[in-house]
Length: 270
Image (cartoon, rainbow, N blue to C red):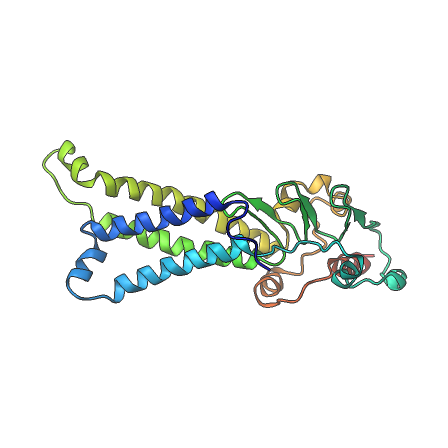
């Protein structure tokens, strides 16, 4: 289920962890609300902040090391994953949409619908969303909801950290003295502000796509995807309504046979 922690992406993960705890340490070393409450013996806020940072780091490693939904190479496992045995192929409802399952030309597995081969991971990934260089892993069927949860927790940590950094700036009679006393904290605040904006945009875009039951890959490459390029510009064969899409994404953990959803939608519109 999990990759080797010392495998591909070790440097990226190490840099992420170091940056996280260095910024946390800076917030505690300067005269921020965290430092002041710690000195007063009021440890509730500092402990909650550290625990939230720890949760964000653990979620980062979980998403980074988790199997995103690699398509198995064994034919019997693939048939089980698809839910379509060879003898029941004729039972798939016919519709105006006509597709055929493709065999990947790189890893030679038969690709379920919505899967894609990742050139970085060298695997086909079920319900492929994108390959994220931040976590050095694909975002797919198994870890997508965890990725969104990680982004939400990380955004809370970053915004809280930005507020704490703001509370630590001290006054000085000149700009030179102000920069000398607040330079390190200013650098940390700038990094946190940039990261906050990045995570906010990522979280917003993923929640929007999830509400439509589409993926980043499908949204960006719709015209090149065999099962979507014949659909209308505003047609999404996997969309079951915003609330149902969100419920299925966050609350239903069983793998979905997207072929069934696709052909059912197509059959309903005939």
